[in-house]
Amino acid sequence: MGEYNWSQYKAPSSAKKAVKKIILPNCYNAHNIRQKVTARMNTTKEIKFNSFCYFDVETKSDSYNYYPYCDTLTHFDTYHQKLTTDEESGSDILKLDRTDGEANPMLCTCDQCGGEMYEEERIYIETESVDVCEHCATYCEERDEYILTDDAVYNSYSGTYHYRGDLDI
Image 1: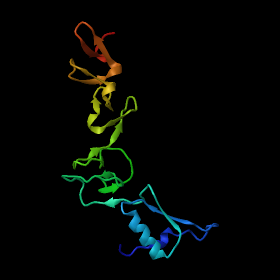
Image 2 (image 1 turned 90 degrees about the vertical axis):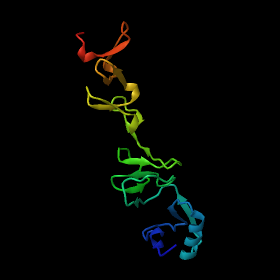
Image 3 (image 1 turned 180 degrees about the horizontal axis):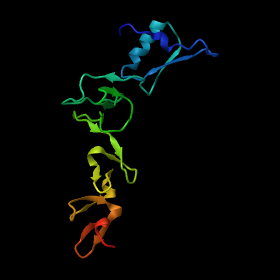
Image 4 (image 1 turned 90 degrees about the horizontal axis):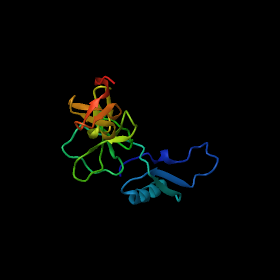
């Protein structure tokens, strides 16, 4: 296991009550680590593992051909080149929750309704300069682009949508 400063997990000297347990970040081999901590610290305190990891892992690249499935450090921040537990959103964050070697882009928010969507599903509305979900966008053949559904006027005669800003109504 290598040399590690286990003293950082002891109770602070200002504590009024004696600490009866030691809490460590959760990990795959928690059983082995629990035994080693008990032996190293020569303690009978209860050793618990919480569900949050308090560290990040730096990587050497911002992209890879294949990504591992991760169940603790589930987010890969490509800009900062690190694996993390932070559930930040953005175009630089990939979620490593697939077993086929692919990475999922993180969710982003629709600028119109506030709903969540995958980055790859967002639709750019040029008339408003916003990114929206498929529920807030309507394709306008006349303009050959998506417009906000709120700005779409349906023509029942032609069966097409028109942009409200192009009409004299």
